[in-house]
Length: 110
Length: 114
Image (cartoon, rainbow over the protein chains, first blue to last red):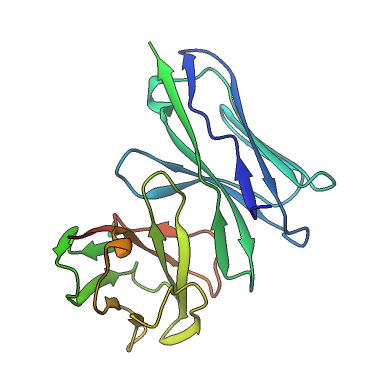
């Protein structure tokens, strides 16, 4: 099993839709989790940090289920500008390393 | 404000050549990370520095890869005798804390080995 697995997508949704991405991780000792956003041919940028059961920031909600080792990212009222690849990230190894999933590609259509 | 910068942005090397990739982290950031990102994949960890000390190099794929950060600021990733499988985007990230998990990435260097 990969350390971090994500829905591969692509997800194509209309503007205004709600979309959810899932991520599972194998390291049960992980305490913190991250979602990064990466635009085409750009660097990853931190979107949200998740340290407890979840986090909400505007239209974005991240939820954590430690028992199932599962993280989700919910985007409400999708905007065209939300089109990007969303990377699920889990600290691993010495906890200095970040292990990235392969990413889920989202395209929001007009 | 100044973010993480990397140079060159693009590098084409012939197989067997040595390359050096530079990273300027955010000023004052203690932690510096190098990642390799293949097309369609997430970044993969290569190595980690805390100030000038290289504390983790477990992700370096072979002894052809070498990284340094001699004064605890600028870092260089060197790849000797490049191979085609080294073609990827090399990302540098920095974090204000030691072992910091909230990392800020540079734009990357896209290396193509022909």
